[in-house]
Length: 81
Image (cartoon, rainbow, N blue to C red; front, side):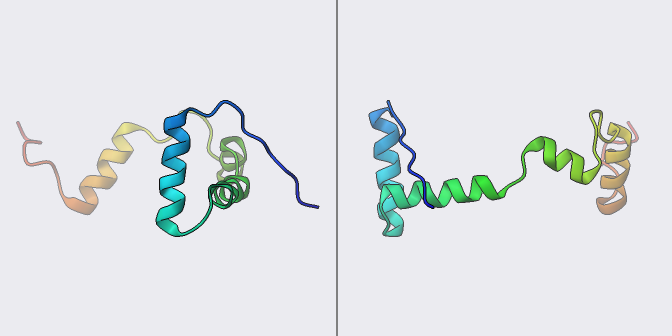
């Protein structure tokens, strides 16, 4: 069953921007927010994403990134200086 969400105390500038964006695409502000809410709900949280990808804090070492970029594009022009 559909639920209703109410957002209180939006700044006038924020609401005006939502109205502009909605009118640009020919929809209402509630429809614009409904579409954005559906996109947000469909995306995994950062925790879920990290669990799915097996990543943990720390990530890839800077040297690994640089080596991968250089392999694809070549070394930096001033790398020998």
